Structures are given as structure tokens and as C-alpha cells.
Picture (cartoon, rainbow, N blue to C red):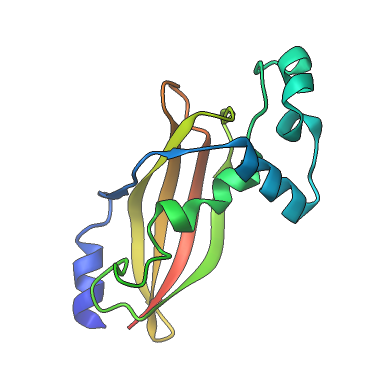
Length: 153
């Protein structure tokens, strides 16, 4: 644990992951809306959103964009652990969360992750990462969050 902690602390302040681009489809947004009960027209009604939305079409839910963190951070593939030797990663929560810009359906997003902190907590290493979601062709990020994870070795 001590060696892993030292190695992680050496990466604090550095970008530790950039994901591949992911296209956000209407089917994905609809599935999230159904799962959460948020079927608001700005997300799920392309015809109405084209006429009435300031975005000219449907947009992804902010919390959907946030929920893509494990996928974009590559936390879901057991064959590629987040750090060498990690047996289990537990999402512990968030410190900060903002949605500065919308994600239009049909656009592509990717995550950039910067390690902000690494400390030993109760037999694990707690890391804090800044998760920033870029939208291809947009200047402002769609999501900025400080995600907290516990790494168990």
C-alpha cells in the first residue's frame, strides 16, 4: 500500500487519463430518462426541442453526463485496472459538481481526468480526481466534478 500511495502522490496535479470520444445518441438519453423517470421534453422529444429549445435539439441530462464517468474513466473493464495492483474501486462520492454547458444529442464527448489528491484511508487509498467532460467543437466543458474513489489493494 505504501508503494502505491507514493506512486500515486507523485502523480498529483497531473492529467492521468483522457478517454476516447463517445457519441451521445438519443437512445442513450431516452434510456437514462426512463431509468430515472426524467422524460422532460428537452431531453426526449427531438421535434419539440428543435422548435422550442435554445439548443436547437435535444440535450443529454446533466446527471447522465456525470454517470458516464466510470465508463469514460475506464473503471468498468477488469482487464485494465485504474492503477497496478488495485483489486477493487469504490465510488465514494463527489466534492464539487457543475454543468457549465449542454451536451447536444449527436455530439461526441470525452473525459479528461486530473489527480488532485491521494491519501491513505482505512486500509485503502482515497483519490480525488477532477473529471472534466469535453464536448467536441465546444469551448466550455459539459461537466466538471471532483470524484472521490477508494482503491483497495
